[in-house]
Length: 164
Image (cartoon, rainbow, N blue to C red; front, side, top):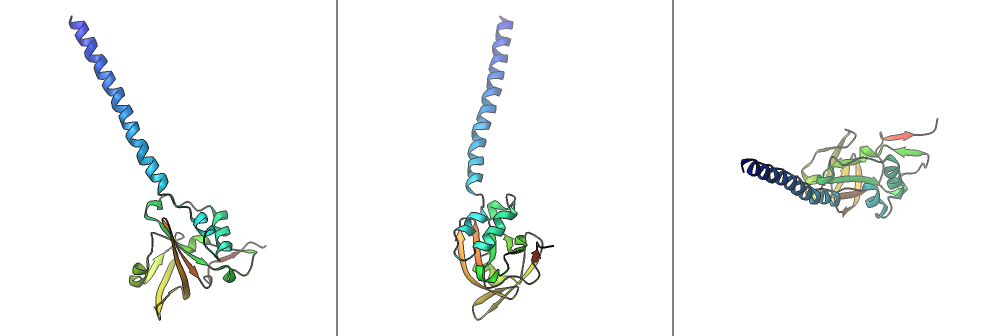
């Protein structure tokens, strides 16, 4: 009788462990699904934004990994197509991307922003227009966790020619 009780107790304990493991797996799955919904696809957001296709193509080629900051979003300062004049030049796109969703309220309070590449961007305001490194922000578009600010120009010290 003792052996039978011990055997049943052991079977219940093992069954409980298996159940607990399965329950943990089932509760972990929705958390992963929520993370997928919060991912950031900068290239897709730029592809849907008018007049920044050249910059969007450079971002797509660069394949930037923003998975570590995806939940907080990103802000892109994207030069308009007319500002990207040389098709043989690629822009160091990480100089134009800032972790976090930078809203107009944040720009109003900021003096500088730090980009994914570590570059420091200056923020100024003139007559109600924000200037990033001296370049005017045209429009601000929010697309999920991506904020896109279109710029009237490119940053002077961020171009890298691919011609040798």
